[in-house]
Image (tube, rainbow, N blue to C red; front, side, top):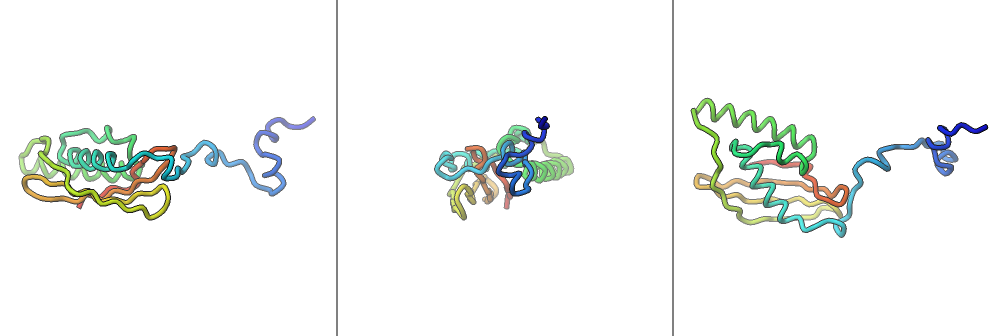
Length: 148
């Protein structure tokens, strides 16, 4: 009698090559091609605006969690803590910044990957938000965000 667990763990083709079943190949994030993804510009503009608001303390970082990778979330969390400390030292309270979005420059280094810079204007200064989007599971996800 054959072992049912062994037959589900490997396909006949992979058993002949000596490879094992990899769950991530089927159940992990699947890369998407550019043709399967929506226009990235609205997401880039909204992410840039939201990141500036998060750093200003006017928006919760958790609101961005579904659009960013775990590494980006941790990086932004560190920046949020530093920004909150700086506001506390200066005696400032968190408030929503008055910003306008300037030019959005987009490049596509390979299929399913977008690298962009969004210029954000405020009363006091102009900042650049660099964002890398990767297509996963037919939607964009930010794998890098840096505010300059």
